[in-house]
Amino acid sequence: MTDYHHFEIREQDGVQILYLSDVGSDREAVAAAGRELLRFAEQNKPDRLLISFRALRQLSALVVGTLLVLVKTIKAQGGRVECCSAPEGFQEVLRMLGRKLPFDHADKPESDVIEILKEK
Image (cartoon, rainbow, N blue to C red; front, side, top):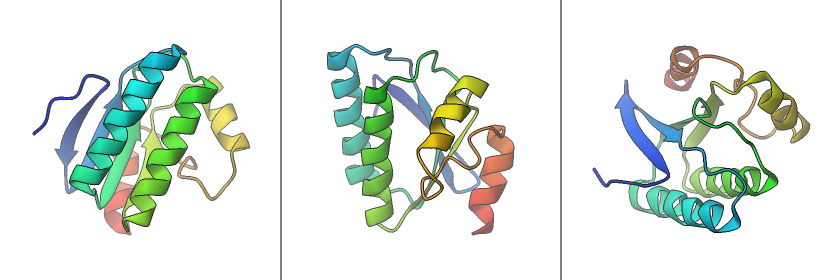
């Protein structure tokens, strides 16, 4: 598996789990992470992807924008995306983005969302 600088990938029960690293709000770091995420999506075309927020300390607009592009890319490929382990402050921001995005389960622990992804 390819090594990434801005996230780590693991697989469990047919679900790829993407652990985001905290890049803060530095534009260059967020842009680099975005390029890496899109490269991952294009090369791997995951059927079921779980994005974990557990290591993020800051959720900037740049990070949210990058995640939205990733979600759109994976959905266009026919994959499914969910998020998990978001701190309470992140959950409020994510809820404001709308119900059509994969943030409904962002407040749940990783194991619960893996089960949700396995069901569908």
